[in-house]
Length: 237
Image 1 (cartoon, helix red, strand yellow):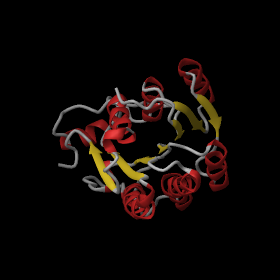
Image 2 (image 1 turned 90 degrees about the vertical axis):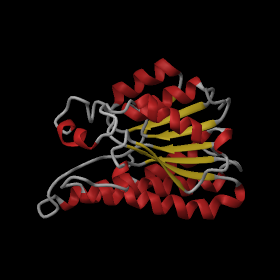
Image 3 (image 1 turned 90 degrees about the horizontal axis):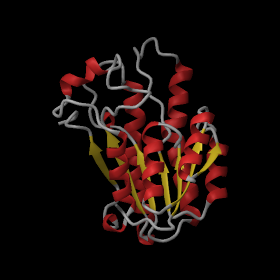
Image 4 (image 1 turned 135 degrees about the horizontal axis):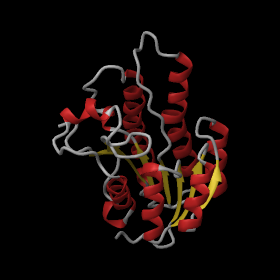
């Protein structure tokens, strides 16, 4: 376990999947946790009752809501941005509104949340964004827009690491490969497409992503910043 005792933590997008696993892990490690959700009200309330973490309804696609929830919860010790959407399709026929919504959630929300958190974040704080191995590798067709959003997080993290480094605030990206969640189950239709690329022939577990995230939030990761931390079973190897 990582000692995160009393660390004030906000998780943007925490009601399901990887986000819920992060909520559970950080509560277990002693953090004071609040998390946001958008559409999964019942799951959010159940997770809040299970863990004692505070559930806050907020739409990650709405810039003002993102900024407001971070400001209201601050000053923070730890900000984690997990909210994200993945849509795959032929770029020549892809709905442009869907692409713009993916940019809003996957790029604009992490940027505005991180900047707002940095205004009042304690020195030595942590900003962690959950990205994707597709920011580095795209071995199949149809993922151009999604990969674009995840690559953008890399530049954001490197730039903010420079901007905030004098205060000891670290900015890192966790890049999962395929992870078994209700949105991307290990027995789902995408599995057949990605499994041939895996070195370890299984999907990842949400708890494994949460474990790496907790390490980056802890004291042993104080010298790690502006970095991409890939946890993908060799998908991008």
